Length: 201
Image 1 (cartoon, rainbow, N blue to C red):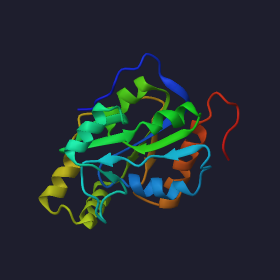
Image 2: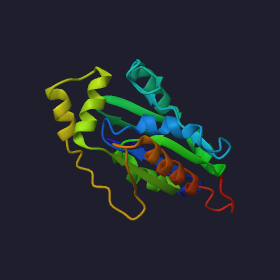
Image 3: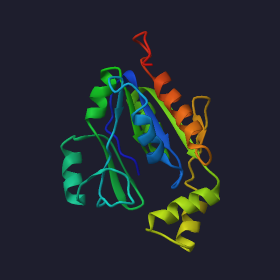
Image 4: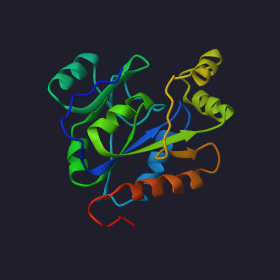
């Protein structure tokens, strides 16, 4: 389950761009393509800390052992952390500093943490990616970590999390990647600054 320390006031004026979607929806790919398209002074792309060894099929992340992760969490090293699929995930405390500076923070997160993000940050832009199940299955198979029934089970798995609201940015990332990237970049650029009066272009 997601875990978050209580904060009296939501952090701002920047925004947290929460990239969500099922396995194979292309979250890391879309984030990678957006990096070179936005103002680096206005945007902070977060490297997640995961209790999983890095490999060529996985996202670009920092790795911690379960013991080191628990110690870092106890010492307040994370702005946000959660557990999913038997792994611990964390976002560094530098996320809070970037949002206080008025930047857009972009991170791949679990759909389960969205309510906690809304509590912690004044402005949250939820970006939900989706793709046809056949596309998801092909992408997961290319990773080489699962096959056959395991892939089918992962795709059919219902997370039991309903994302509703007019602020959800829904992007079809199963077709033309360039179109999806354009929509994603627009969502990032529109995210901040809310309270500064200029927009990165």
